[in-house]
Image 1 (cartoon, rainbow, N blue to C red):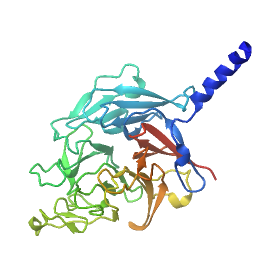
Image 2: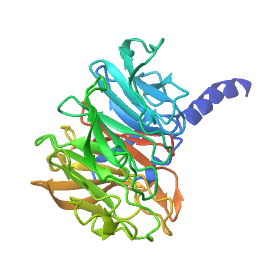
Image 3: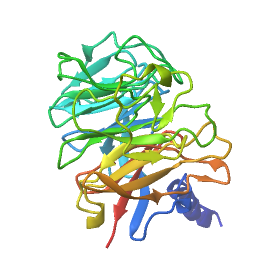
Image 4: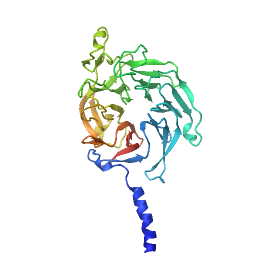
Length: 364
């Protein structure tokens, strides 16, 4: 009996370790697609960026940390998670450019030079730019390098709805990689936490979160398309086609660009990505995936899914669910945040509620 126990106990412990900590079987995807855990735990996982050696860096909002996810076949979930920075202020935004990791805190952007080869002894960061707006409301930044090699950053309005004198609020700005030539690129954007560039036209597209306290169904979240510098997308005067009760009257002389797509109110559309991989079927090529983080102040919850938006000549032709099941009957176990297309064509999805990075693949 003792010998039998000696044999069975390691097997039992191994079975427990291999048990999936999350109910992935409750997630629904189109036929042929599979979702699995890429890295766990990644507490408060937010924006992701891919480095040149296959390392995925992940920012956080509440944890104040930045993680590096390294391939490691010895780990249970196939990857190793390393903390590379901590005690930061809302380091939501991460971007990788010419061997350096850029991290956006609330009031500054840091640069970690040659970080991939120094993960055991992370170098002291350089300050790219500081003295950014320091208000906490919507103070988590989203950053990415564009096709023009400039660093773009979203700066949300520091309120539900207001008109601030500082022109950097409610905008997407851009700058050189050294922080110089800082400029407002697009205005009237309440709170964007995700943008990407069309792989063909190189135009910028972004999601925007609508204001609160106009009811369960107003106003919409948005998908927007920037065709040139200086465009204004309405905030705080208009929310899509809906005039703001306090500010619309002040906008008679301004020209606004409306959204390409109005999403349901309060779904919290965050990360978005054009699919540029070769793994998924051809119908997904150059189409937009959007992570809906989920509502926080709606009578009935909405969002908590990943959707795919199909375009034809910059016009939306369809919107359909891609991953659902993080919410059921008012109970939530996951909230998707950001999306990242990997070199092999798989799609990574970060989840700050479950503290995990998922990998979505397709098998013919």
